[in-house]
Length: 257
Image 1 (cartoon, rainbow, N blue to C red):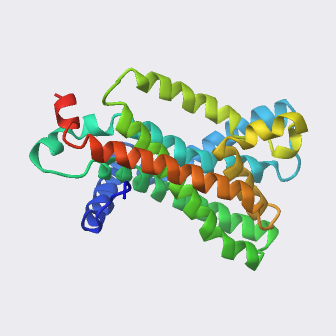
Image 2: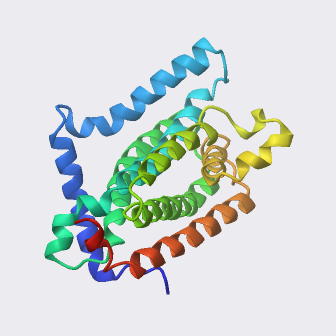
């Protein structure tokens, strides 16, 4: 089996993630408040531009925009921070053996904790505004699980490849910027011409964000076919990344020195 993450390393991933979050918050005056303030500032900037200046969206636009930003942010932060994750842990790799998949997993979990805090606050506010549909609430763990698989796949894939070709960091960085504008953060599927909708739906992040909006804003169960596509793509990419990390496990230490 290509995907290997021994259970004995789960404690390491968890406590390393917490240590990373504490270290990150200690470098900022407002500390953990930035977990909420950062997406709030993102929301304010884009709301001013798209809703007020460009006069786009309706009464639900704030929720539509926030869902897009928060969902994309977990993927974006985990992938960007995993591009150099093996090089950044060179000292630890030199001292003790660890399967290399644990390093991007730490970034996925640490950024996932920040996502969970913001997502919980949004969900509570959304319930206060629009109420709650029990059926949609029961489906939420499925959506979160697919989201986690996609984030893990992206983080592991860039972590596996960039040590061989460091210049790919610039390519991946530009691709993340491109994904930001193609993932439907500022618009919904209904606003896209029918002839182009299939192209956008091929982007797994677009399909995922649309599913979150259907679940939380419309309070309906999202279409299953796009989610099956996202899950299958995530699992395929995750198996490829896991194979690469395992295949070159002993090669990475020689590349970073």
